[in-house]
Image (cartoon, rainbow, N blue to C red):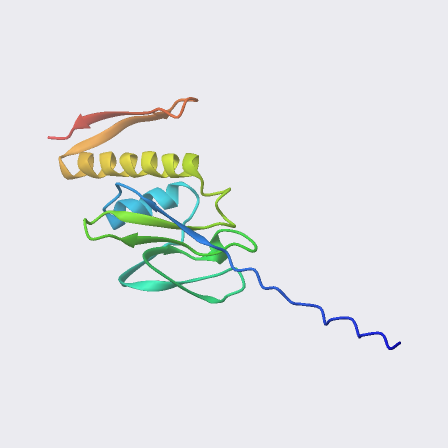
Length: 149
């Protein structure tokens, strides 16, 4: 009896799945400021949506208007994107691999940082200066403003 040769090993490439999460964030400048505050100082803003890249540098079909490139997130990460929706809000595009880092709590912190950036811009645009800016251990942030005459 002749033995059959062993089957050739299969090479399986794993491609991260992207999850889309609707947000109420709608201002790209404030979104960039919020991402900066959360530790992403390099953020791209595109007039036309740009392609996202996977952890191996592979081009993904997902496109976004605001992008944090994978090299600024961590080793073996995928790009993080925010795509503008018809109503003007952004939808977060988060890879399954990075979901542990960019989870619901992270999105909550992003929303808080966005609100903080909005408050600072409002204060500046309406003639206020920030007297104090304190952060509490529970995540609360307090601003004391004074109108400059």
